[in-house]
Image (cartoon, rainbow, N blue to C red; front, side, top):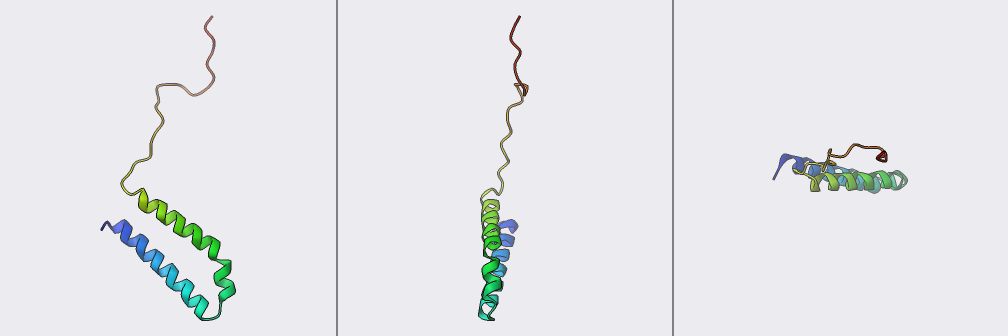
Length: 72
């Protein structure tokens, strides 16, 4: 297993454990307030895990960017 995926799994486990401890200790309001950011963390880590080893696609550089001038 690549080390990047190990780190992703470790971070997710820590966040889940922290959220569980917060809820058990009675800090439910704090855990609920942080749910949107925790959801975003999980989404970003999932996207990062699925993009391991793939390079982003680049637009072809054959055409210049900008409006074309009509031929005279």
